[in-house]
Image 1 (cartoon, rainbow, N blue to C red):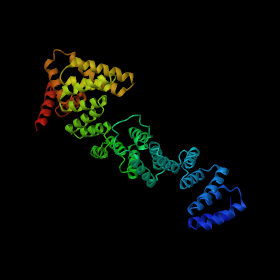
Image 2 (image 1 turned 90 degrees about the vertical axis):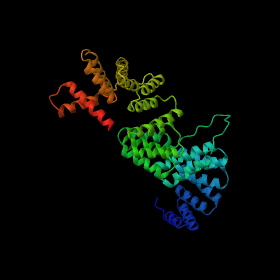
Image 3 (image 1 turned 120 degrees about the vertical axis):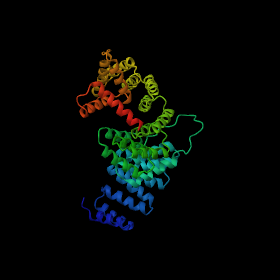
Image 4 (image 1 turned 45 degrees about the vertical axis):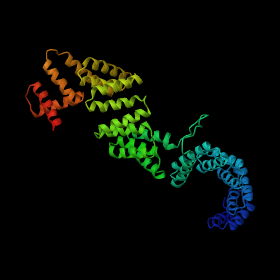
Length: 422
């Protein structure tokens, strides 16, 4: 609508001439009595002049004409000033009903609920507001809402709980947003995931879940040192969660810090003793340290918790080959192959079949005892990984062509043991 007085009123309000703005909006309404936006704007001007009852009247007129979200929100603010908390809460909820993504209404609802003493519900509202502000890249309001959440959360855990704690909607970065970003990184889009996480941490530098999530993404990028730094930050912010220790343990393992990795997996298992993945992860470290019996013990524990864990069977099979218990290795490989086949995980299925084929080929050559023993010795030196042993033998054949098969095996064993001793 082309209304000159309305436009003048907007300009005067911007200049904080609220009395002049009211005069212009009044002229606009004389020309157009059903001009809802003029009622809303005049209500804002009355509110800024602290003429609260007149502001409520104008917001009500705007609501009656258009059911405006902004008018509901404005009236809710006015009613808070009048200490009409039930009316303010009703208006905030009406604004949300008309626009479920209207962050200011959630923020205001949190304020009203806090004043009424409904702290868990107030926290939930502030968290939802922070989530929406986060989506809108509104850093300042997001920080303010997060600060309100921290102020309201109990500083100490109660010693006696007489009734179940209320369910509080988690912040996006702690639940769905966290999962969405990890899923994005899992699909290979680690760059966008990192950009989103960096922004979250700009909005709230104390978001422990965001540090943990960024650490996981950095691991996927192969940036293990910075990942460990993020996990350390999450722990400093008191995120005592098994997922932090588990992923920091994996990062340490990749960097060759076996002792640190074991310490992290031990701590994670104290928090979550029935996590089969943790036992597999710790078993892998033990196996790398040539503690094959310790590795087998962990893989077995993982299978007690989750009998359908094909990876645990496969890794235990590798550990059995390292201590030359080939019959047990074959049994574990066969179980792993069957499970991978059922899951249609063809890459792992083929890998297990290759390992199984190698063991069976050795078992079917009983006359070549010396050769078999040397191959098994080589296998122990490379941690049970057939593909590594074969690659080393092929390289020796390329470097020294025309030699007997046994010579190449002995050459690789000699080189490996020499490197270890040095």
